[in-house]
Image (cartoon, rainbow, N blue to C red; front, side, top):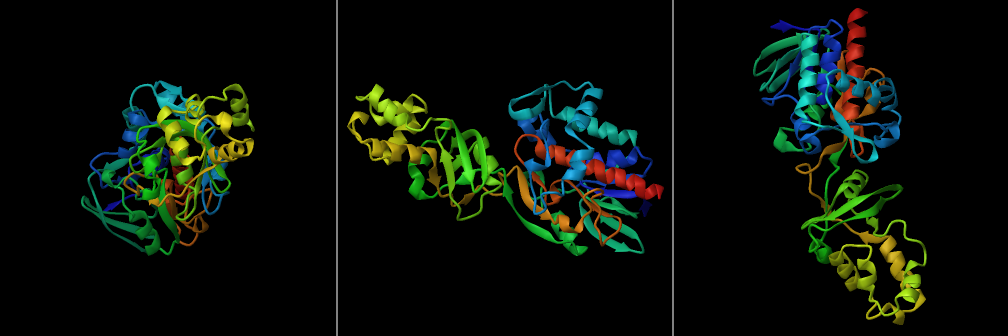
Length: 396
């Protein structure tokens, strides 16, 4: 049986970051990954260019039962820190909208960088090795996997959540956490398209049409593009709001964000002979304008409509209520809301309070970022925090 200072389960972003940080602090680290390649989720992210962080990443951009939990890790390892690492490897990058940073080249560069960082710390990585059993006794964690048995005084859960199962994602992290007495906040798909019932078939027929909107659920609101699909709604605004949506709740869509109050009455004065569809087509895709007109009871020229009717049409367009009947599930979800409860973890070290030596990081934990590089930043920050803590633990 091989002896290590720490065993990290999962070779995704958080796991590799943690292993590299601990390894470079002198610890003997083993990473066990059931996939045959490291960083599979990194490789497909950002259309293959990896949206590796967001320059505006802050605790307010994350969902958690404890909204304060992410503050410590995010404050100690920031986007600036990760950008410095990327630049140290000569990886060219660019900023897209809303602070999103992407590689100019390939996401493979980020994976190679993390693997090189692990190599600098002499980290052992066992790929294609499913974990069969984990025991804890006498201050040691013993892990039996397809490649053998290893033991260490510290174990890091970095196996993520169940989103994108085709990449090998499972709920293993939750089963292991429960085994050690940690609570799990109900996991559900996040950053995921919403599905619409048959009553909204008119909008499902608009598959492929996209427009900028403000999507709202409760107090959460996002202004980005929405995309109509053959199953319902997608696009950045919808993916963002899906993290906040619960079954039974409506989603309000402002189809003309920024439109001034009374704009339809003004259009009536300027273009009294125009139809509502023609007026809407000046600001929205024609197919969407036609579909909305079918649902708004204003026939013929808008000059024949009362200002009251036009005002009501404005209100509907500013808060069009959709009643999703579900999501496209974990298969299409980019991340998972929920996970290992932060109540049982230290926000500084990611260590379980009641199980010394057990750590949980990344998507496995109940911390979920917005779309746009925030979840990778949490992976880097939480992985770094745990890696540092492992080094401190060994030194003590």
